[in-house]
Image (cartoon, rainbow, N blue to C red; front, side, top):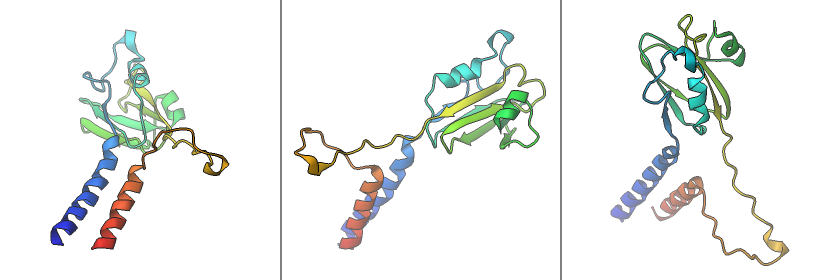
Length: 166
């Protein structure tokens, strides 16, 4: 009986750790990092952002030297200036978690760097909604497709199973 309890606890514990595995870490700017773009390439970060799909709970990793990164409002982004940023870091490597869907605005906090193109807009996609299930009472199902349970349902069932047999 003790080994089955241990097994159930392990299954429950590891299932909780699978949920965050669906997020992605992005190194901003790829190999170059968060640097002042050359004059000819002042949209480099917005182009980089447009090539990626960002989801809620993804993280951005900013790597830079003698600079900073600020998350700001749209108005501050357009002015390339912020007195009260939403997020500020200047330690050379900063991690920012995208905690909601929508637009995020980033600028450099060093004077003149934003104006030279060290700024970026990130669009985080809305979470995917599960497909609507047709009303089963209106007639026989014609599809042979099987719908899998979401991870949270699986965790609940495993937890319930463990609580019943412990």
